[in-house]
Image (cartoon, one colour):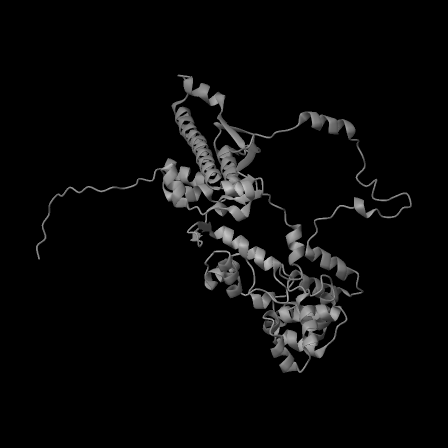
Length: 449
């Protein structure tokens, strides 16, 4: 074996990822909220950067509203002339489920120990309303006897929403039926042992096991399906702050032609602070101060440049979507065409990853509502006339057929595939099943009523 030292020249290509290029890619990948957070972060750390929001305010209407308004006491309309509560004027409070449950328990006649145990149980519930710690753990932590714990648990489980403080799904459902005044041993047994059979609509198996009629079985199934498996879920969802999607691009029809333009409303307009420009021009200014200003100036200009590049790329992608999806913008979702990111990348002479970043988290306001950019990108299948049909169009067809089906005789995936074939679209049963699952629609056996 020979080991020789020597010098050899080789030629290779390498991509040097500069800080500016990295920021450019990150900014392009951001949605509107992430970009706004990035701008605010830069504003806090960079004194050279100034910003103002583009907010269109109808000042004439604003002044008119101010003139028509009057000062009032926020409590003056809560009661009407007969001193009765006017419910329309009561504003919903932002209390949480734990406060509500504690308020309900405060209405019971309890001693100090019972109140403490009940509140401890309430504080131990998760956001769905379940008690996920063991009875033993509570008894040991509070140093109480089993009888006191059971009495307090019973009181908490009688609170609203019904089903709260259950240890598991089965107990949650049984609490709900008992609170409705339903006490049936067979129904409770089905809940404890055979919820999977109910979920799969296997009523014959249940009838055979419990020796009941099909009509009784259906009645039990309807009762169970009307119960809430997560008693507090709706409460938390309704109390959370709503986040509204703001479109990056708006498409409007102007003089029989669709036009795409950027949505600049509530976006930041960035500029360089003039004070620091003067400092740089001043020959007597401190060198360290100048170096700091130059560094911050480069950072500010880089962000402004990358945001402008982001806007340009998004608008170009939107214009190609508008051109290639003309059928959608004229007639709606059923007429969406097949389109891939590779096609758009080739048209814009850029890498496919750039298009992927450009559509990530971006939204478009169209005549048919707000859609994510990704919605317009989909694969295709051929019909009997060798015409390409987008997967999105086929999904819409599947959804429409399922909507129109008879609830007692839902369409199977195989039947949907046959119906599509009659319309000239050859789709395999497994493809129908895949699209149905992507639409979040249950199988025919689980849709049957």
